[in-house]
Amino acid sequence: MWLSVKLVRELGVDEGDANAVATWGVVGGIIGARVFHVFDCWTGCTGIPGGYAAHPELIPQIWTGGIAVWGAAIGGVLGGLIVALRRGTVPIGAGADAAAPGISLGFAIGRIGDIINGEHHATACQAPLGICVEFTNPATLGQSPQFPIGDPRYSPDPVHLVVAYDMAWNVLAVIWTLALRGRGLPNGLIFWLWMAWYAIGRFLLGYLRTGDPNYAFNLREDQAIGVLVLCAALPMIVRLWPRGPRSEVAPA
Image 1: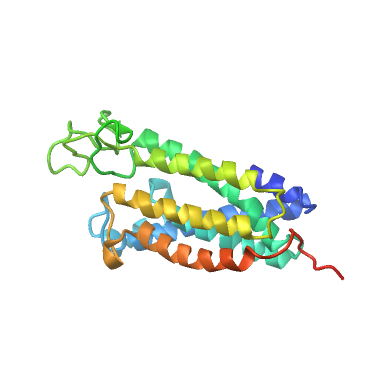
Image 2: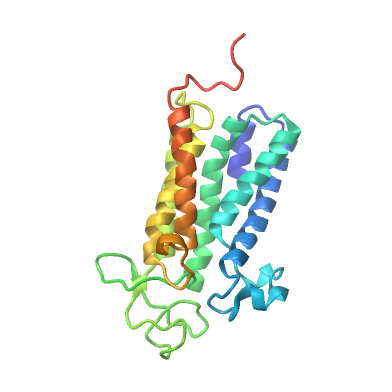
């Protein structure tokens, strides 16, 4: 949040308005992350037999775990956008460009907890073709041969530390979205480039993850959403690319 606020403040936006947009972006991200998770696990998920359809009382219990990062991205963007439009003092395109590195940094930091907890099960891994791990703590959510067959955490082999790959992908996004700032690109282009980058990463890394429902064309939810986001981002990138220098107000 602080990074995006800092970048928006550099645009000359009032601190109160910048904080309001960022705060509601966070709120929207939390709500979106939970809604997407509930939808993904409506009929069943690891640890929720029968899914939320059978246990609706679990839906508001976000403190027990269960969020979807795509929901955080989409909900956060929508939450910030709505407040920015209502305030009328935050340039939408340039503000979205400022949000991209901050969101990526937040995603990268969030993956640290996933690594520690062993969250998000993955496919078998063979060194040196990846970061191969086994989670041995009895309380872990991660996979290991030490657990009995039938336990959702059982895996006969080491598995990819796929959340670390996701974290690295987001760290790279922070670097290049910051590097592109101040290069005269049209407002909003950095944001849509970031959306395309994130969508491609989630789509590819989805092939290394297991344990979640599949949807159209045997794609996971994160992959299916990635395809939709990429389809939205590419036309915007093409549309914005030929435009002139960064300017929110057309010359008189």
